[in-house]
Amino acid sequence: MLRVRDDFLRAHLAIAALFCFLGFQYATWVSRLPALKTRFELSDGRIGLLLMASGIGAAASFPLVATMMKRYGSRTLATVSALVLGLVLAGFTLAPNFPVLLLVAALDGVAVGFLNVAMNAQGAALEVRFRRTAMSRLHATFSAGLGLAALLASGVNVVTTTLSAHFAIAAAVLALLLLLARTAMLADEPQPAAADGKADGKADGETAEAASGSATEAAPPRRRGIPLPSRITIWMGVAMVFGTITEGAMNDWSALYLKNVVHASPQLAPLGIAVISVMMVVARLFADGWRTRFGDGLIVRVGSTVAGLGLALALLVGGVVPALIGFACVGLGIAAVTPCVYVAAARQGSDALALVAATGTTGLLAGPAVIGFVANATGLAWGMGVVAASALVVALCATRIAWPALDAPPAPTAAASSTSTPADAALHEA
Image (cartoon, rainbow, N blue to C red; front, side, top):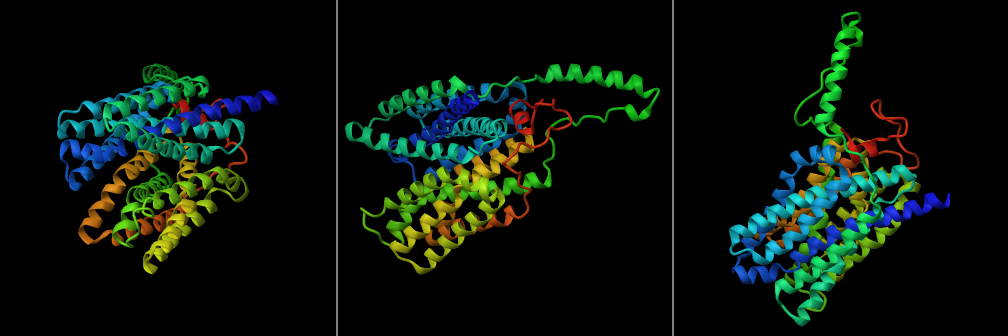
């Protein structure tokens, strides 16, 4: 029994390093947007376009990521995409002009999409294999990575404002996190498509021969190309994209709302993102216990409702204190949404997980830009109102999703072995 616990902790720490890696890498370059704006003389609109390019790259990764997961497995995909994300920092430093900068941001989005799917597949399989909830704590390390990157950026700026020096230090931190992740990520055995084709061809041939004696033994034809998502998967994707829009927009726009709309002092304006981040990390540290006790569906419905209504009331009342209370509601309520949806999607298989992860990454990266466009047209207060509405859309979607029970692994699929589960299939489904 002790060995099982040690195996769980080692795998948990390794996968947590991946989540921390992604948060740290993203916040590293986003925290230097002011420096990039100055260097390339960018307008606010071009900054929004840069963020949108990253979101487009994440969306573009969807047609490839499911195939890559099946062919190479989540462990290999996580490693390669993490290496690319480390190199992306050098791309931001060396880009000679804005068009190249857009390409680097798009590449960042593609790699983020790959790593996002791989690490969440690992997290979902961890829960199933050890029958213990862990996904919310894993996502807490993503939030911790955001905070660590912000602290590093602040510290480096005291010494030097040079992008290359900052990104070199950040790359060293990312290398350490990747080494930690490689020590105990869950192993998978990918089944190449070619091998599958041969095996399937043989099976189909045998079935065809058998069908001459009995038509009922004929195997149904396999679909080629990108499979159409199920209705439940679509609801999961919608919930994920609006949940990550809420999360990402609050991180990027809370300080500006406090400063420009409710006229907070320069000392109080940065507290917006601090309140959101602290509440989100604390909630995610406790959310796995809540999931075990109350179930994922109730947690998502109640949490997203609290986030949406809390922020909406804060916007209606106005003022610094109501705004901070509303931001705290968002951090507390939205914290468990993405972990729960990722677990539910992983139970549906790697295709569903890839779609949901792609929508989530797109919402996280493109959502702040969309809110910026709304704010530019109607004002930031209305833009924040869109964030509140997004949280309420999540609550609506949560009523349409079949949430898995987390106290026991799901029944194996017909194509799986007696020890394989759908979450394992998300690791190396063929």
